[in-house]
Image 1 (cartoon, rainbow, N blue to C red):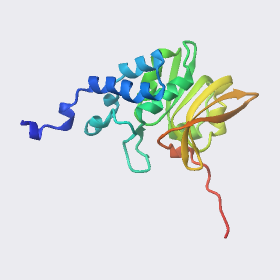
Image 2 (image 1 turned 120 degrees about the vertical axis):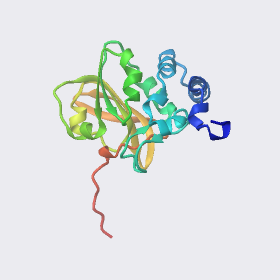
Image 3 (image 1 turned 90 degrees about the horizontal axis):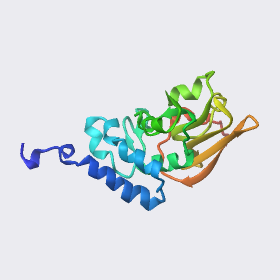
Image 4 (image 1 turned 60 degrees about the horizontal axis):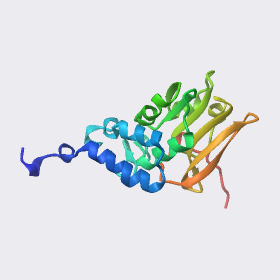
Length: 207
């Protein structure tokens, strides 16, 4: 095989690309905490993508796995995961629920940092109820609404970190359960794939 016919993937040094992601995407955007950088350096993003998309693992934007509407899942941009881990502040005694974006990458980032971790697909999280409660919920994508069944799985005082769609703009958001209620508060605008399983119900309008 000549250089001209080699695939792009075969020429990539993913370890170098991962270190460049830390230096050029995370550190320059204010993500400098050791636990965040250590996990993002340790977990190979390329392992969570199909072989034909592995070359895109360290670009500074999301990689869609399915159609244009994201129904096939996504791997969000590195900066989203870095900021999400920073806001989540995972603790050794946390019981964590990860609402998946379709790759398992976020769960792998968090798993060694917490006491226990459960991962469920977005479509299931948007509709199903469960008896187990969690001290931390993290959502791998942006949502329009937080359904009651998901909020109910957070313990009193528990935290939630997610993307949030507000007026068609995605933002990183965090919240805490207080007096049985959970509200998400925007932190900053950030490019985040939208999880359409959490779209708000369409409302009729009249001319």
